[in-house]
Image 1: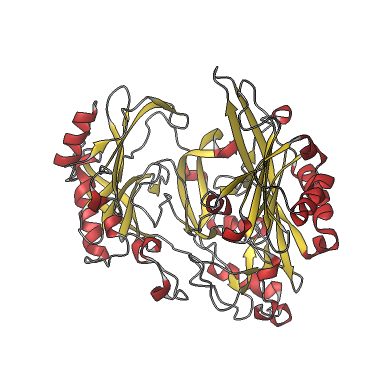
Image 2: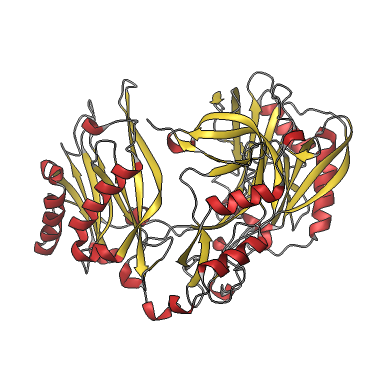
Length: 578
C-alpha cells in the first residue's frame, strides 16, 4: 500500500521541515507542516529480487493482468518485457517494458514503461510510461485532463469508478531524458486526483492520481491507498453533521485577515513550480486556514496545523556581511563565526555555479559530510551546507543536519532559543535600530496526540529544532518573503541554520494608504473559499487516529490565490504551462 504525505495546514512565512535543520529559501511566502510519508512503492520495489524475463516467464495470472492493461493502453503491446520482480517479497510484482532491450545502445531514447500490481488481486498500483513521440512541455486544460483521466478510470475499474470523485484541482509532473550528446527531451503531464467516496463524501489524500499529457495520452497512474483498506464503519455518518451554513458561521468566527507585503508575489507558475511571473504586492492573508469538525462544530486540532507566533521586536543591527569565496574560506567561516564543528568533515564535490532563476543571480553550493569510513558516523551522518553568491562570495545561507540529535529531548526553553536567535542575527541586520516582526515555530516538539510514541522508530522522530524568522517592516507592515531565518538546536542551544534576508532596494512596494478594510478582505476570502464536507484521515508513519475526521474545509483554487489589499479582490495564481 502506497503512502503519501498529508498536508494539513499553513503557517505564516517560510517553509521549514520538521525532520531536518535545512533552512527554507528566503523567497518562500508560506509554510506547511506535513506528516512525512513512508517509502513509496517504487523505492520498496528496488529492494526486491529481480528476475530477467529470459529466465522467468509471466504466470497465467500475471499475463491475464497485463492483457487487461494492454486492452486499455494498446501502445504497451509494442514494448517487450524486460524483467519482473518476485511477488513473494512484498505481496506485489512489477514488470518493466521497453521498446528495445536492456542492452540497447542508448543512441536514441526508447519507449519504456513500468507497471506494479497487487499479487493477490491484480489491482494496478503504479504505472509510468515514457514515449519519446509524446514529449512536450505543454499541458492539457483541466477540463480535457479530467475527461481523459475519467475515461481511463472507467475502463480500468468499470462500475467501481462510481466509488470515486474527481478532485477539483490538478497537479503537474515532469521528467526529461538526455542522450550522450546532451540532447534533451521533456515530458509534462497534468495529474488528476480521484478520491474515494464514503457515505457519498470524498476522503481526501486517499485514492489515486492519473497523469494525462497535452494530447490526452495516459502517462501515469499512482495509487495512494486502496479502497480495500477502508473500514467504512469507522467513518462518521454525515447525517449527524452540522449544516453548511452553521459551519460557515463558525469558520468565519475564526478567520481574521492580516496585511503583509511580498516583494515577489507569484502571478503564475511554470512546470514543477518554477515562477513564471511575479510582482510586488500588498496582500491580505487569513490567520486561520484549518477545518471545522462537522460533528462538534469547533476547529479541528491536532491535524498537523501549526501557527507561527508573531511579535514585534526592536533590534540593533550592525550591518556586517559574511563572505566565503572558496571552500577553505567556507570551512573557516563556519567554524569561527557559526561555531560549527568542521573537524573530519569532507567536501563532497567542488561547487559549480548555478543560476537562481528567482533571485536572478549565480550561486555556489557547498556540502560537507562526515566520511563514510568513520564507523561511528554511519548511522548518524552530519551534513553541512553553505550557499554563496558566486561573484562576491556573500553568504546567503548555511545549515547543519545532524542525525545524532534525532528523537532527543530539548533542554532549553523556547524563550532561550529565541534569545540565542536574536543574538545571532543582529550583527547581520542593517546598521542601527530596526523594528521587525519575529515569528517563532517550536516545531521540534510537534507529534500528534493520537500517535503511540512507543511504536515510533528513532529515525521517524523529529530533530528538536526551533525556527525563527525576522521579517523587515515597510510602512509598519511585515515583508514576509525577505525575512532573516535562524534555527536553533533545542538540545545544544547552537544555531544550526541561517538564511540571509533584507529588503531589495530595487523593488518598489505598493503604498499602504489605499488598502481596503480587513472586513472587506474577509468577506472576499469567505466568498471565494467555499467550505465543503470531506473526510480526513491523517497518517504519521503508518499510524492513524482511531477514526477519520468528518470536517468542513475550504476548497482551494487551482494554483492558489491571494487577496490584493488595494482592491479587495481575489487574484488567482495561474499555472502557465502552455
